[in-house]
Each structure stands twice: as C-alpha cells, then as structure tokens.
Length: 317
Ligand code: AMP
Image (cartoon, rainbow, N blue to C red; front, side):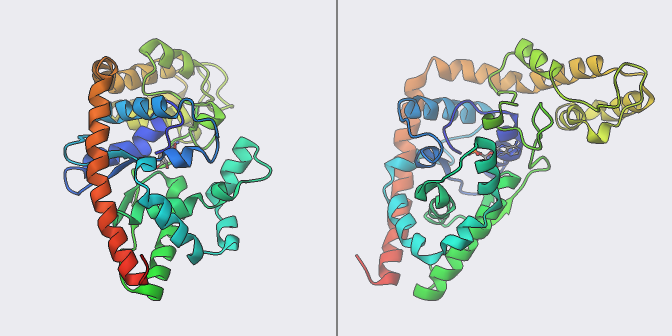
C-alpha cells in the first residue's frame, strides 16, 4: 500500500482484512510502497509520518509484525535493481494499455505522465517477486497489475531460467467498495471516503451526504437497495440486519435518513476495536519504529537471497 494518507474503508475491506486472515496461513510480507507514492506526489515532507500512520492503521486492524515483516520499499534497494531488470522485459505499449493507470490518470486529471508512473506496475512486479509471492491480496483495481507481474515472471523464466513463481490475486467479497458520492471506488483522490480513524460522529456526518437511489425521494417511496451504496455498506458492516433493511427499503417503510443512521452505527461499531488499538500506538510511535527496523532486516535478507538467484540466472553481478 502507498503511504498517501490515512486509510479508508476500501483499503480495509478490499485488502487489509485479507492480509490479516492470510497471515495465519502464509508467510506474508507487508510493504509500505513509499517509492510508489512518488508517482502522484513528489513532495517527501510527509512520507515518513504518513508511513508510520499507515502502519498504525495496519497494526490496529490486526497485522502481527512478528508473524510477517512490515517494511518500507525505499529501505531495500533490491526493489530498485529488480525493477530496472524487469523494465527490459515489457513493452511501453503493454504498459499504456493498463486500465488502472487510465482510470487513475482520469481521476487525478493527469495529462502527461512520468516515466516512473507509467512503469509503476513494473516496480510492483519487483515488489511481489522479490519475495517470490504467489498470492497477492489486493483490491480489484490491482488485478491488471498482477497480470503484468505474471507476464514479467514468465518472460524472465523463459529468458534466464526458472526463478520466479507466477502469482495470483486474492480478492475479498468487497474488492471494489464504492465511495460516498456514488463513484464505483472509494478513493482518497476523489474525496469520497470514510477513514478508519473517523470518529462515530464523523462517520454519521459523512454518511448523511451519501448518494442513494435517486427515485427514493422521501420515506414511503419504494427504494432499490441493489443500486444503493449504503445498502452495500450494510451488507458488509451490518450483515445480520440486511434482510430487514431490504424489506423496509423496498416497501418504503424505511427512510434513507434512518437507514443511514443504522449504517453509521454499524460501521462505527465495527471500527471500535481499531480505534482502541490506534489510541495505543499513537502514543507509542517508537514501538512502530522498532517494528519497521526489525521488518526491514528480515525483508532485506529474503530480498538479497532472491537477487543472488537473479544474478546467477542472468550471469551478472
Ligand atoms: P492504494 O491506496 O491505491 O495503494 O491501495 C492499496 C490497496 O487497497 C490495494 O490493494 C487496492 O486495490 C485496495 N483498495 C483501495 N481502494 C479500494 C476500494 N475502494 N475497494 C477495494 N479495495 C481498495
């Protein structure tokens, strides 16, 4: 994940929940993609603090740094070397066809793109394959990048010998959580988010602005839950009440104001344990720094091993 600010519900339900559940079964690597953050913001003044804040969100959501290392990409230079080698194995035309990049350029109104931004899936391939990742828990927007990673792994293996696995994406049930404005994806760049660190009051306030079924103007009007993003949030955060909410919405008996209040309460409730843990880490930031130092040592060890194999396969270095 890129340290571009505080995490939102999309990060949690699209990726982070899978990280937490997979860490018991697999050897996970949790990467702070700080080089990647430079693709959309060249300023580095907040990069470190944003990284620590993001790791606090991870730890609050249940990431166990003893089970699996937490580290910054920029501290392990092998990412940069493998990125360079991989960049020879893919054409610019292939990268220009990437639908996620086109979507991002549209949302951020980017007219001309840097070389590094165009190639960011190549750096992502290095991030994954340096640790020989075979399962990548991401949101739906990242699936095209995993496909690019697979192509690069295949190309490397054919050209130089079998070093890398061909990884697969692992999606959650809510792999593209919609934003409050009705946009298909909750995203910081479109400002339509509920943050993991929002207070119950902030959550309620934000939900009041959420776009609902335009045909349901007042209580009594029948609504269509399947096109309403608040209903999607209910499905995720209030599953026990979903049947009742659908009935109330469709019949008109449940108005949007009430429905949003119930939804806000359910989200605030689901985030309560995270809020508690965050309060602890926010006053123990040194602990987080130690977690990073340990994670970086462990990740570096694996990265160096993989690069030795790469050097040997390519007969360089
Ligand atoms: P990013 O902030 O773009 O670096 O995203 C970090 C991770 O969160 C990626 O795996 C994304 O696919 C996932 N993600 C971000 N926004 C959403 C969303 N609205 N729904 C589901 N997953 C998301």
